[in-house]
Length: 139
Image 1 (spheres, rainbow, N blue to C red):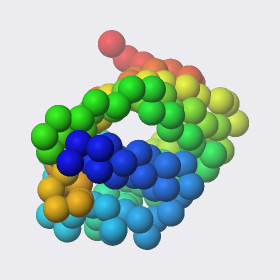
Image 2 (image 1 turned 180 degrees about the vertical axis):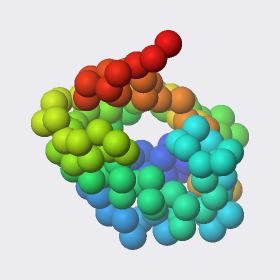
Image 3 (image 1 turned 120 degrees about the horizontal axis):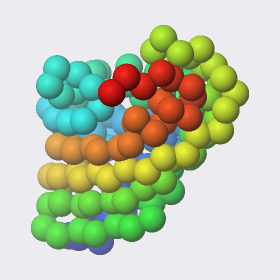
Image 4 (image 1 turned 30 degrees about the vertical axis):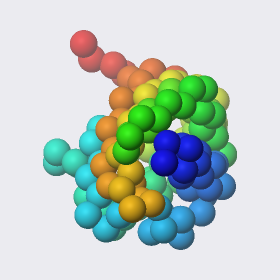
């Protein structure tokens, strides 16, 4: 089971994020999935609420690439340590495109059930991302 779950998470990052295949979101993310740490109040639920986040990020960073540096699985859980790279070519919230290259890291944990992601916890260094695109950080 752990190997199949790791393969599913690898596929999520490769096909959804690196290739931009939006249709794979519906295939791999359960309709009632709960996604923590990407915005939302207090979470994103299911593909319908995940897709606006996905489109906003892919628009801001159309060449986004996520490398899995480490992947660990146990029971229904898969944990990944990732590196995110890309170029700021589109607006991200109030920040216009800067054409700057970005790189930041993060950790995600997915809970898999019946071959789909049913819950995800994300902790990515978005503060580092915002600094790299020139955002003013107020302590």
